[in-house]
Amino acid sequence: MIRRISLKTRTLLALAAIGLGLGVAAPYLFPKYMVGLVSLALIGGLFAQSVDLLAGYVGLVTLGQAGISGAAAYGVGYMASKVGAGFPAQIAVGLLAGMLASLLFGLMAMRSNDVYFIMITLAQGMIVWGLSIRLYKVTGAENGLTGIPRPELVNPYWKYYYLVLIVVVVCWMLLGVIVKSPFGTSLKGLRESETRMRMLGYNTTAQKLYVFMLAGFFATIAGILLVYLNGFISPSSVVLSASAIGVLEAILGGVGTLIGPMIGAFIIVAVQNIVSIYVNRWPTLMGLIFVVVVLFARRGLVGAISDVWNRRQREVSLEPQSTQ
Image 1 (tube, rainbow, N blue to C red):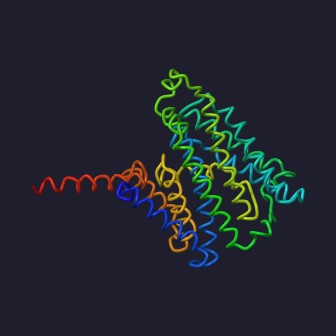
Image 2: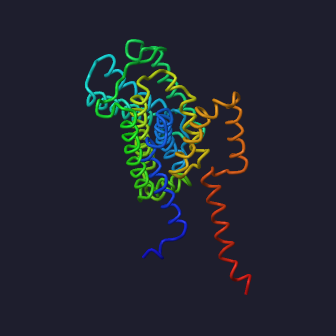
Image 3: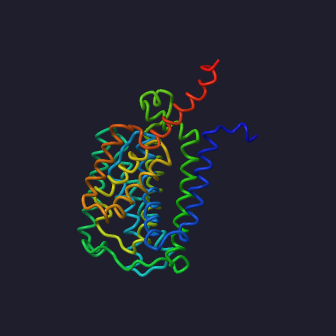
């Protein structure tokens, strides 16, 4: 049975086991600050995966995803700091706010494609940012909402890290089921030719709205995890650059894959928080990384590694023939 599993699959399973093992052991291997960064990278990876579900599998690049995660985070923050509600109510309102934003954004954007979809989602994100500045009594304006405690059960940093790890892994598995399902296959067909899918009888508008809300759900989860990690939410979490980071993480790691956005998130978090300590011009370094990836790895780092692997496998398969 083991022999039927390809070398590539076995390698991926081994890497996944190593990654999961390191994830579980992180609080024992790294100091508190590093564990916090790993938590941040995991949440950023989940957010980038929600962006990639639209960009990589449907071909819809969004620049408003931070508006959805931010709506969820503000929902939690409002209930915690303004109302003083319990954690179930905080999380329920956060989920409701994120999914309501997903529905409204999706209804507005469904009949657009390509650059028009990008422009509409950009405008939606800017609307959320504008509301976060204007609605002082709800959002705290520029000061944001502070003093958002974690649930007592997971208040220690290492317990909250494990909660983040479990939630992200579960969401990752759900995303894997979605993209491998017949619905996920139809999304790829939608990406290749919406007209052809419509001729085959698919309601493409309903499909796009459905996947938009699915992506919004995972962005909502990321927003709730982030607000409890930081303990506050401010307009800087819903600005255009926050959405753009998610897109860049997906592109850097490799769009159309679930591992790619996670790798991209870890690289960007490392450059922003570790490399920046030693390199003053770290934004220039990050820009150079993106230029190199775009020029030499059009399908991202995962795509480049996959290409090298496949080329090496073909060379190995040809070696016995050349020696005969």
